[in-house]
Each structure stands twice: as structure tokens, then as C-alpha cells.
Figure 1 (cartoon, protein in one colour):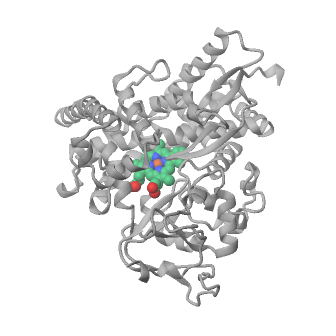
Figure 2 (cartoon, protein in one colour; figure 1 turned 45 degrees about the horizontal axis):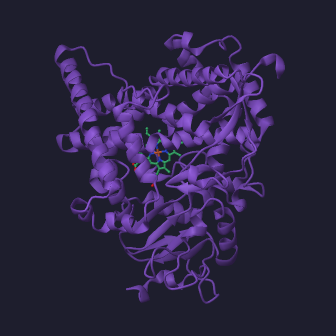
Figure 3 (cartoon, protein in one colour; figure 1 turned 90 degrees about the vertical axis):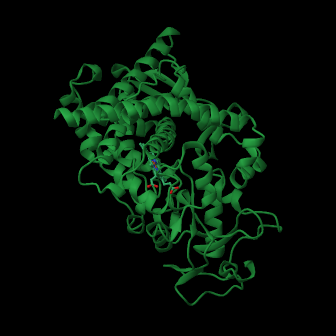
Length: 531
Ligand code: HEM
């Protein structure tokens, strides 16, 4: 009943026509920082935007109290069924798409796998993959004798291959070998399917696949055929892996020699058969497979883009790059030869040191604040509610609401502006849009009170649906930065890099959007005597 939608009372930008929308300016990272700033200036921190179609009035809130309320009350504010249906149609109903009891059960079974103790055991695997990437780049540079000038490398492409490898071994003890070549059957299946997920097919077919998925069963198109083919491969290969692991765990239980698998899949399976877990809290093999797919989907591109954007920020800010390299070299003066020579204890101690390096941490905090891979998220109210506000709420008639809340009716969407929060000058200071890792040594009080799982940013979201893989990605990012920055120097090319939100915030070369996401940097070996 749109006439009674309380959001219509709120001030907000004019969409410019009955079938027009306000989504583009708030979702496109090339304009969204300015759009958020302008809207807050005119309409306050809680305002109405038009989504898809004239009946879809949404709340966009940049009020910390309201966002905290929405993200913490995850049963009152769920993910909309439309986005869950789209995710489920690709990777099944794992943790990213599930709601209610199903989600609670899955999250409970998966949580032990992401404990600090368990993640530490994955460190050597991450080191191995980082070293393999470093060797590959060294080989590529020396094959063309480009040690002096440096070689232009699309770091986005290569880091994506490496993070796929990491999640393969760390996620389910499987070697994609993607750094070496891209021919593995399972790797291709995941890659092709995720490419379909981010390919911008026609809006009409996306809407059809959400509202009438049966249509593509009767009239398959290229996308639905690719998804079917990939799902068959994944079900066969990953399904066999799951059965194999289950057998090993059962044999271990019988023989009294517990299976020592340290990958996330083994830990998930072990946690699922733990004696203290009630029978009705266990999850099915299908759910296990869906969550392996979910870790692949949620854990590879996000980490790879964070690493890619961090290298770009360091290339654009050579002083920060030099300072970080100096910190890393200082921390390990003896161990700079080759991490593949180290034993597991030495690698663990290195990881411990890495996790406490102040500038490394500041740079990562600054990078994920400035370019969050998940640009924004969405929730739907499952009940009528009053969302508490900290800031005055401006109404469409120009007045200010006297009550300190926004009324929302069941079924309305709330747009969670992840990047909007991270770049808000009122909280972070006038240089909020700039790269300044030193800000973290003296954070404005307003920023230090913002909600967020990591560093008062919404990059990993907040509340019960926040990112379960945050610590995993920190290990991966810090390890890779150590290995790559102590071996290479990164410089920008002449190309202008732009950000585009294609499911995640990805880099493109201005004017070459059709060539796909890429980020070329000039990479040359680091030679201590030259620097
Ligand atoms: C820099 C890297 C990463 C970023 C920025 C990131 C960000 C996020 C965000 C924003 C969400 C919430 C999504 C929403 O509300 O719609 C999320 C959820 C999730 N992430 Fe991550 N993520 C990262 C790495 C990882 C990794 C490495 C894994 C797994 C190995 C992972 C697994 C998940 C899962 C399973 C969820 C769903 C949690 C739930 O709903 O209970 N993520 N992530």
C-alpha cells in the first residue's frame, strides 16, 4: 500500500520520473562519495531513495545508530528474497543466502573452523602460495630481461589466480594450481560460474531468473547452460572431495587417530559430527557443499580485490610504499632469503610478528576503509519497526521530525551504504576521501564510535551476518603484502584507473571498460642498494 508507506514522509532526492531510480548515484563508486555527501547535506542522515520501480521506496541511512540497529537485528532485517534467490541459483543456499534457523545452524557449525587457532594452521599454505606468485612474477620479469625497467603486470588478474589457489588449499585441501595454469576442471567451473554472476546480462533476464526461474528450464540461454554445466562439475568433483573427507574423519574416529586435515572443509565436517552438537543442529551434505561454494564465492574475489587495491594505493603513494617496505624488512632482517626454506614454527612466528606490525596494519585498515570491495548491501524489514536515530530526521515538507526514529513498514528495503559510511567526512575528517594510513594513529572520536566488525568500518559489515572470513583474509593479505613488497617495487602506469561496482568494486582502465576488470602496474625487482 504505497500511499501509506511512512518512508514517503521523509525528504529525499527526486528520482526525476515515475519509472526513474536513485540507485545509480548511490551505487556507482565513481560518483557515490559526492552523492552521499550532497544528499546528507540536503536531506539529513536518514533519507528516502527510489529503488527499482515506483513502488520501491527505500531508506538510505547514514546514521550510525540506525545502521547498527538494522545490522544487529538480523531476524528483523533480513536479506531480501530476491538477492538470496539469485545467490542460491548459483552457489546454493549456504551462509551468504540462508536466513533464520537454517543460517544459525550453518554459522554455528562453521564458526570453529574460523577460530584463531585453526586459522593459524593455514598460515604455511598461504605462505607457499604467496611465494609461488612471487616466483612466477620473477620468472615473467626475467624472461623478458625487464629487471631494470620493470614489467607491466595486470596485478588484478594474477592476484585473483593466487587467491583462488589459497582458498582451494585452505578451503578444501584442493590444488587448483591456478598460478601455474588455468586448466583445472574445478577451477574453470568456479571461474566460469562467478564470471556469469558478475557479467552484466540484460536486466530483463536477471529479473526473469529471479521471478520466473522455471523459464530457463524450458528455454535455456547461454547463462543458464553455463551455470548448469559448472554446477554439474562442482557437484561431482567437490561432492567426491566431501565424501572422501567424511570417510577419513570416520576412519580416524574408529581407529582413535583423529584425522588431521586443517582445511575449512575438514573442520566444518568435524564440527558437524562433534558429540556436543545436538542432532537437530547438524547440517546436511548438501549444506556442506553449498558452504564450500560460498567460501569460494565470498572469499576469493573479496580478498583478491583488497590486495589489488592496496597495491594500487601503494603505487600511487610511493612514500607509504617505501615506509611499509622498510618496516617489513626491519622486522625480518635475517629471513629475507626465501620463505619456502622456513619450517612451520618459523612461519608461525613470522605470522605473529606480521600481525603486530603497526604500519602494515594501518595501511590495510586505510585500504579497506577507502575501497571496500562490498560497496553497499541491502536488508528488508520483516516487521513494521521504529528505527532509532541519532541525528534529526528531515521530512519531505521541509520540517524536522520530532521523534527520534524512522518508521518503516514490513517489506521496505534499507540500503546499507558501506562505502558511504567509510568515507563520511563528518566522522573521519576532511581528508576522508584520501589515502592517509597515519590517521589510524589518532582517529577522530566520532570515527572510533562507528559500528563495524573491523576498524570501525562497514567493510566486513557488522552484527550476526558480518563476515566470518575476516581473520582469514587478514592473514592472507598481510602475508602476501610481506612477500610481494619485500621482493618488488610497484609503480603506476599512465593508465587512469576507475572503480566500478560490478557485484564488487573492481578496477577498470578509463576508456577500456569493455576489456574487463584489470589493474596494470609496473613491477620491478626490489634491489636494496638502489633504494
Ligand atoms: C577482504 C576480504 C573480505 C571482505 C571485504 C568481505 C566482506 C564481507 C561482507 C561485507 C559480508 C556481509 C555481506 C552482506 O551483508 O551482504 C561478508 C559475509 C561473508 N563473508 Fe566475507 N569478506 C571477505 C573475505 C571473506 C573470506 C576470506 C571468507 C571465507 C573464507 C568470507 C566468507 C564470508 C561468508 C561465509 C559471509 C556470510 C556470513 C553470514 O551471512 O553469516 N569472506 N563478507
